[in-house]
Image (cartoon, rainbow, N blue to C red; front, side, top):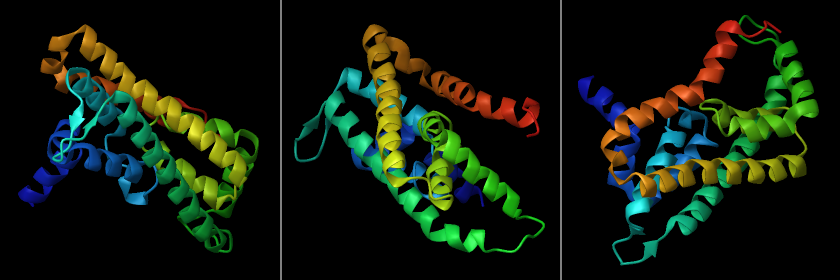
Length: 213
């Protein structure tokens, strides 16, 4: 049990992910967090920030000597994030018909699914873009979009736009802060906690203080 908890702590630690998996694990984490149902616990925001800070000192170098500067890493991460959302949408589209035909139960209310469908028809673009900046929501937003059959072209456009904005904001923030304040990495744990608090605060506020509707 202790070993399992320790492994979980490592998997949600952005510094550990970056040091032990490098570029490829970074891309997998972003892909999983933005598209796979089980990826909601990954620390996407803080991982991208740590990546930016690391790149401010040195480019990522693979074992074969190939180096990746900040712009190339950003491009690869954007591709991973866009593909992740597409997979999430596909999963939602495949499971959607089953949910719409499912009978009402204690845990499932068809009216909630219909409400989600109405919301995505009116504000789906906003949901796809802004969900990128909110932990947990960025995992489930594309899945729900697929479930309620959001227009594919519209989804793809805002999927790409939202991913570019999110990845560039997180990585470049870490990159430029790392350049301006070289000793900042010594306080990386506090910075990561701060990022988690800032990004989850809107969700916590909505849950406890938002309107019931």
